Image 1 (cartoon, rainbow, N blue to C red):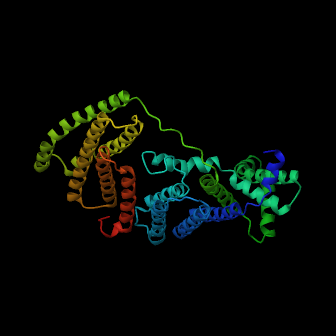
Image 2 (spheres, one colour; image 1 turned 180 degrees about the vertical axis):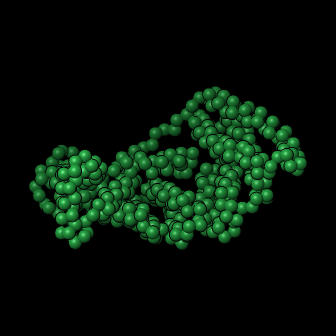
Image 3 (cartoon, rainbow, N blue to C red; image 1 turned 120 degrees about the horizontal axis):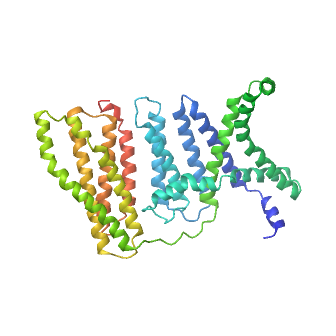
Amino acid sequence: MTEEMVKTENRVPKTRQWILGVLTLAGGYIYGKMIFARNWYILLAVFTAIFVAAGLFGAAKKERIHKKESLVWLLFTGAAGLWILLYGGKPDQDICGYVILFLHAAGVYWIMVLSESRLDGCLDERGLLDLLRGLFVIPVTHFEKWFCALGNFLSCILKARRKANGNVRQAAAGILLSIPVICIVLPLLMGADEGFRQMVAGVTGGLSQWLGGIWDWSTAILWVFAILVSCYLFGLFFGAFENQRKEPPKRASLPAAMLMAFTAVILIVYSVFFLTKVAGIPQALEDIQKGTLLRSTYARNGFFELCWIASINFAVFSLVNWYWPAGKDRKKQIALSILGIQTLGFILLALFRMGFYIAGYGLTFKRVFTTWFMVVLLAAFVLMTIGNWKKLQSIRISVLFGCASFLLLAYSNIPAWTAG
């Protein structure tokens, strides 16, 4: 394609990108207002609605869409946004922060499913990598596309000559890119020289009066933030829906002997732990009855370490399963099954301690939330251990179970049935 053809193509109106740019700018503005507003939960729900509308608009031209799975993630996103609207303003909802994180993750993953941008086209061991790509890689690598759409809009409106069109786009993008830098260096320059500070104060004061009080620094910062968020959102949508995907790289593998040795060392260490731990349980219970060991001390001792070990084993199980050479291998099945059973043992020990603690001191949000997390891990390892021998989408089922149960937990209104 020649340079003349490129310039001509750049002047072709890209109405879909213009509309998407307006939607993302509106979403960025709402998101910025939300940060310091008292009714932030209402604004976040509005932002969710704009995000969903932009996602559906961006996917309108997709020929193939995973309709069922995308609807599931759209349901998760909508349910989280609705929870924020209903319960986000209540100070006693300790789960609110987790719901906000869930809302962002579910929304981004919905875009990945809707646009068929996942590495393997399904939810598997690389699902977390797909989420990280959607949260960071795709938006950052297409961060400038919002400015490109703006430049295209200006060039089409002005209808200048070909060379002038390119200059207008470049100048507009340069001016907008300079705003965040100016907002950083201008306060530093004002602090470095009193005369300059007074001059800037006079200019901004005059502008404020001329604009009838519309201009102030908070408004400027809000719009800068809105543009940055808009660039992030537009980059996500553009990279997911407009950018032509390349064929994913072939699945990599590591030597089976290396993975087997890696897993065997972990299994041996865990086996020694269980032999010593199980042997000490009767003595610990006896000490509790005698009063020489507090129930709370026994329940807390090692509980969070067990939770971390179970979480690490989830990553180990997934990585070994993914990087093991293709094809059925009885050694892999046996090793991963032992790892799964041992991890189930860790989880059951942790649940036993938590149940022991709750029986003595009652329910709180942290105890309920931690118990939910361990139950999800328990279900995940049961499914993964079964999937190690039979064809089963264990990762997909585990993630969907975790998301659905999390929303059920959130909607159950935890403060109403816990002690605090």
